[in-house]
Amino acid sequence: MSRIGNKIIAVPKGVDINVTPEGVRVKGPKGSLLTQLPAGIKVEKKDGHLVTVRENDEQAALHGLARSLVANAVHGVSTGFTKDLDIVGLGYKAEAKGKTMVVFTLGYSHPIEFTLPEGISVKLATIEKNVRVTVEGADKQRVGQVAATMRALRPPDPYKQKGIRYVGERLKKKAGKAASTGAK
Image (cartoon, rainbow, N blue to C red; front, side, top):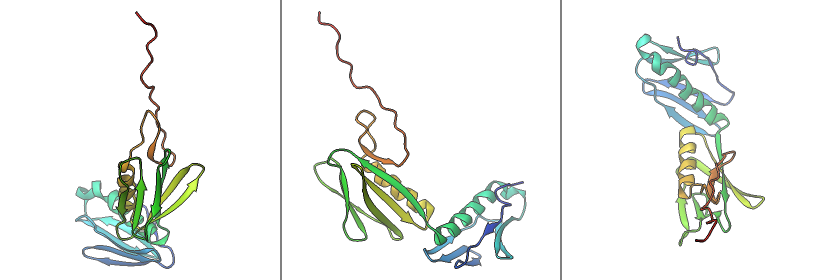
C-alpha cells in the first residue's frame, strides 16, 4: 500500500491536464510541463482531481514517485518553485545581463557568465551586505539543478564563511591554524 501514491492531486483553476500514453501534459499560467510516467502507472481524472493508479503490486515502489512528479508539475505550472541563494564575501556580487545571463564576480581573476536555461528566471536583491539570488521556474528539478550549479561556482568556505550558500544553510565554522604557544 502506497500512502503517497493513493493521495489525490487537487487541480487548481486555470490548469489544464491532458493524459496521454507518453505521460501527463500540464498547462498553466507559469508554463507547460510533460511528466513521463513509469510503466504500469496510470493517472485518472475524477471530479476535478487526479488519482494515480497502479496495475499491480510490482509497481509499488514507483507509485508514490509518479504521484509526486505529477503533483510537482501541477504545483509548478500554477504557482512555480523558487530557490534562494546568498552571495557572501567582500567584493562578491552578481548582476543580470539581460534576461538570459547572470554575471558573477566571485574573487576569481575573471567574471563568470552564467547562461540561464529556458524556463528559468532570476531575481537579484541586496539584503544587508549580501546579494540574494532567487531562482524561479515551473520545473522543480530544473530550479534545484540551476541553484546547485550556481552554488558550485564558489561553494561556502568553512574557514572564512565566504561563498554562495542556500538561504538558511548552516555552516560549521572551522578553526584556522593555531598559533604556536612557545618558542624553544
